[in-house]
Length: 197
Image (tube, rainbow, N blue to C red; front, side, top):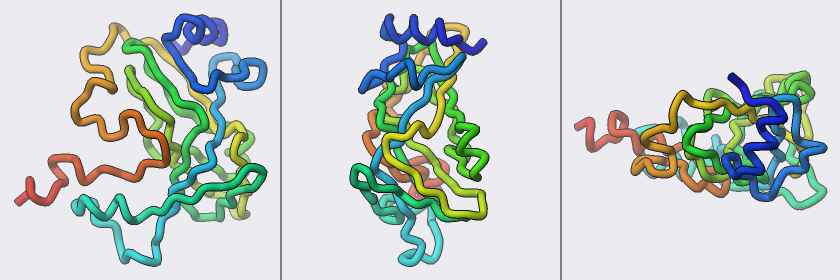
């Protein structure tokens, strides 16, 4: 069951969903979703420096992207076939019995812009800014502007509060992220080189 606009207003008022800065509900609240805005930080892949990505090398994922910060009023141009990490303006906190789903906006999808590759679920107990996996599947470059509405979240209840919310997981790789955090897949025990040897 997806929460309605009425439910989202109530959950925001109760603090079960928290956004900082608080959303402009007249602009950002849909019938059953809440739009988030694009931040000014982007993680751009430095494909000229590395011949390939070695997911088992714990140092490499931290160095294959560089952070680019777009000044107010300027755009970030996303070229066809390009994939970058971005981040929302808003910091999100979820109660331990609510899951959020990251969705694209139709107006951007019609230009070929997608906001996530696979990571659409935001776990109960999440705390931090939401990192976007932005790609341009269209044929033309698209200028994106910090502060624009870039994605939507829908919210659903889980059957009971989870036993281990994201903020309490010791292996939570992206808890409290504040920027376009690179992949930390090398932290996975089945991938880490020393644990495979």
